[in-house]
Image 1 (tube, helix red, strand yellow):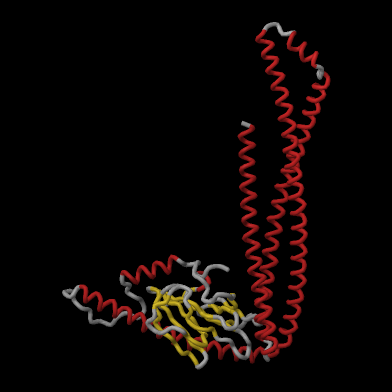
Image 2 (cartoon, helix red, strand yellow):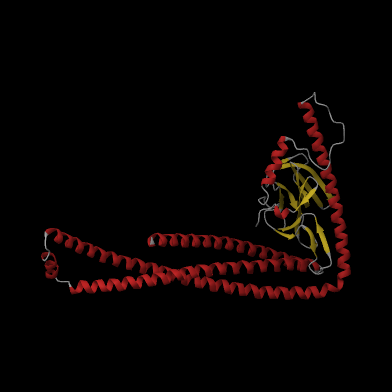
Length: 417
């Protein structure tokens, strides 16, 4: 029973260590991704500082960078916590091995002493010859043989446990160094974060007096957003009506004897054909796993009502998400589907709308488009180039997901980065 419990404890401890090692690897990958985003954000911030006359965009980008640094610090703290757990488990193993090794050495020393006292060949011979009968002599011979084997096994076990103890000590020393490294990294990031916040506060204090002007600019921008959303809504309704008319015609061809409905077709909900339903179901099944509409980038403005970074009383509504990416980046389809519209929103702003059953994805703020209406596109296929703002130096794609005419939060559909 004790052996069984010991084996069970060993299995549980090993499983826990494997689990924590896996978590450490994931946290290290996440940390590397955050550090990459911070570097991209820093490069973008420098470009904006050179080109942007208004300090507002500087503050917005700095806010993103501050959030990323806070995430990095939090991730490093999680790594340190996991490392502490590993170190505790290893220390428990060291204490256990030390105790077992002490007992083994004590037992072995006593065994050697007894062997020394009875080391002469005469005493061993007398031990055998003093047997009362042959069976007893045989048993004594076997005992002596087993005793010798046991002594050898004890020596091997002491050697094995000593090696394990050295390994655990080495591992613990490495972990202590790693912990010190993580603590130093975190302290460095905390100091950088404080510096970033102070720099941002200087800019904030400088532009707070321009609140009315900022509010006016935001109101104008919000009106532009609403105008674009109305255009997209109109095109989606037209696409829904066209899909329903096409489905009705196919149904009539397949069943000529059935009565033909002469009422107006719905422009708010697609009546899915069996083929379209498969596409819609596949799209839905990939919720949380869709690739980003650009190869590199991060969400710089979320979905829904977003509070202004400087003024809590000012909010802007976003019908999708804005993703900041690299200059010259290509937009790409997040899922296979059919291009239903190529929209010219302004001379420098184009959009592509793709249908996936009763779902639609929209890719805004493109400088050029490489697909046409009616094209069948595959996942990650290039749709065109994302526009870089000449004044701010920022390259941002606005991405929308709708089911029929209902807007969805794209963040919940995209694969986490």
